[in-house]
Length: 537
Image (tube, rainbow, N blue to C red; front, side, top):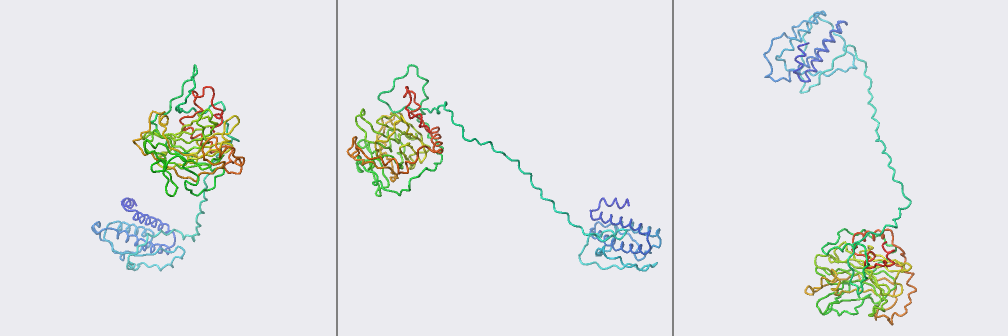
């Protein structure tokens, strides 16, 4: 047994299994010896068949070069069958010693199918003292069966059907812990009334003929306006909210449907060029003799919604003022002037510097309500929409449908309700104040300066009278009937800004407003105009 175990360490797993099978069979033989002689003979025959098959398989796996010198052993036919337990034991010991030697073994490949454990053992053969040698069956063609399993001492019981193990129960993941939202407030906390709106760096307004005298001990001055080298901000405006009641869709209309040329000679040689289809207008400054362009609507209106698309002068536009505005007739005598006006005024600049948008108002002849804005885009690269909503409740300025300014109608606040206004557009030389406070003038050598307009169907208002003659007093518009203009139109439905529009206005004021008259202490040392308390949102 020690020799067998020593060789087992160097043999592969299959050989080790064969040796273990032989050892188990040897033990079974000892036990079987206690039984009757017929059982011993049956076990002996079974052992011979199974063992010969295993050893043949072992020697077939050896290379010829690994075979050592052959040792002569007696033929199995000359071996006598043991007649006693002692002889049986010696018989198997001699057989194991002979088969543990490396020798040439007949290349037999017996194929013994495993016995069916359910079938009864074969009937015992008569015992003879000199059994005939065991016939060797020819090897089957290339069919190798696995090593046989050892025969148990006692006949095994019929195998019970083994039921497969029940499938494991699906393990569900633990439910997530509930996340409770924070308590919802019934309403957002109102802003503190004691905190003033954020201070915006102011830029100097247009020169006034009578500047207010300084106080004896004024507060520290506001920081100067941003230098001209500041580039326009890049972030876009927030998306527009859904209008309360949008205007009906309007088909494209030519310029002549709503507008007329009252002052400017047409090209050539003048500064107003209208395309053949009337859908595009160029306003030009071409020479020192032609430095003005202007057109206006055929009617004056009380309330309405108005819009136009503009593409501003590219490159060097210093000294120019490009406008889209609404105005009643203005008197030459300023002491008698009572006109109303709402403006979009674009102040030109040198190449590479941002164009400034100035919105302004004149109420009953009084102005000084300038707010200056940067734009979140370059207005010289493409057309952009500029529009105004005016009803008896409020006036809203829009850029690309985004709110940039509001003026509410409140008690003790001036508001335009009596004087019908015409829609107008112009290009003119404002070198005395337009660019950097008048420091940079219009350079006519850079002419032509071309301002472009499109989208002339954006005129939807309550007509009060004809525009011509554009004088005050005007025979065409002395006492117009405007009682019907306060109702029956979609643009009269809005009374306050929506929450989205309030957010738009606040965001624009924080990011793009560079001067606000309601924050200019030096200009209004005795108190800001009354509308400043209402028009930040």
